[in-house]
Length: 288
Image (cartoon, rainbow, N blue to C red; front, side):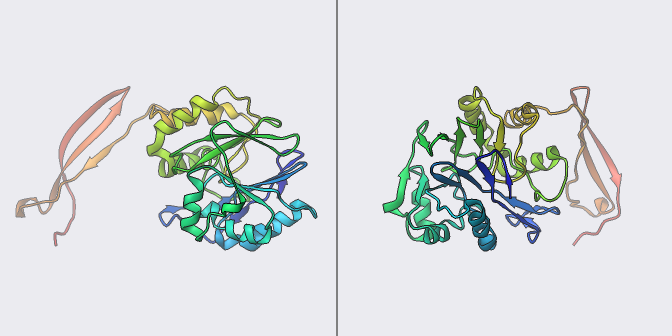
């Protein structure tokens, strides 16, 4: 746990048990599942964490609340690594309202058998929830990277709660360079939704942002232009750095003569120009 600002506390968890995130992405340095508390006249919680970390997360909440009880759970994303503990939270804090959008609650009913109809606050694009001095403005971000995703801008502290955007692989108790694991995360999780990221930027590009609070990876507080620039490049499918890419296509041999050789079709890029060559390569191989 740590303070993001005087009133905003990080209450997420680190996962060093996972080896393949979502069953396919290698995460040698684990993962973080981030959650945040806004302590104001009213208390708001942003998102929950993976089901395996229920007890640790609830203990973090209790420590952050310091004897208070939460008024709101703001659900920005319904993917299970962020939403798994909604029902546990609702049971522990029966007076808390659950904040989501029109796409959030049907998913909630599918996941938990209830959409907490008597506790819902349904918000729309641009609407604001006040917790006292903090005004939380909601930004709909469909398909970044699920249809119900929304993000939140705290106009008081200029904090952008970005859901899965600006996330990265890796737990927070492991130091590593942001760009590589964030790039790998973006390509695997968000990459094909570049146009939707661009639409999001059109809505939030003019905001004054002091920090970005994603649902995975570190809170970003310095050099924000660097991270925003990388996301602009990735989401618009631009070239990040000039270089040479060599790809080799080797068709399966179909005749006895080709059993000990293959055609290699090599594509490469030099000084911005694409080149292709075709060569026969002798390689040891077996054919079933």
